[in-house]
Image (cartoon, rainbow, N blue to C red; front, top):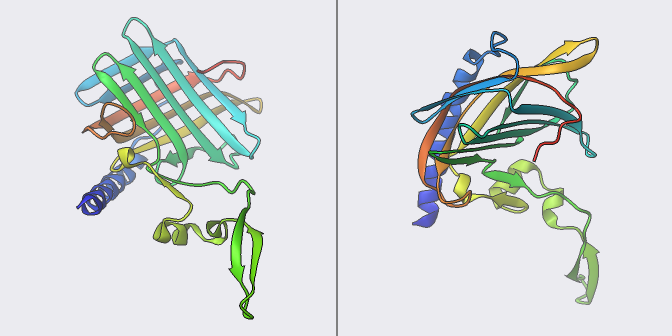
Length: 232
């Protein structure tokens, strides 16, 4: 019964993903927004934020580019964080990032509740660690060999099919998040990022317990990039 319930949630999540994906081109990056401002609608609440926000772009040791947007507004009691890891980004062309294929996180805390979205499925990373495995040879002798986990030799499709080397977050089943990031480049340097975002999230007691679903709509931002900023 539990597996059946999870399969229904996965199916609904895929439908919602297709709906949002088809709408994403309409969410064009809006450069008419004032600098250092962000707006969105979460459920029935429209949230408009000005200033008190930071954007960072940093190259990670694994070659990924991490883009972070942090916002804090104490008057409205709002905290928000969008963090996405983009592979091989040239810093010039716009990027679409989504929970179905990318490492991305959305966190929002405000007076009416908290929303948290991360990918429901992640692939375990090969750390190079090996395990002792018992191997029986054709002549019926037994040997002990060091081997890497079998999923390190599987494709992502096979890992999904077998469940090997796959980390599932059941609390995120049915949730999704999409963001379009467009850099504003001057003299070869990214001075700001503009973009749009949307998604659907479940509001529970924590990130692992599902609650009611809420829509994240009409998200837009225009934020200066500060490489020396510190985002918690």
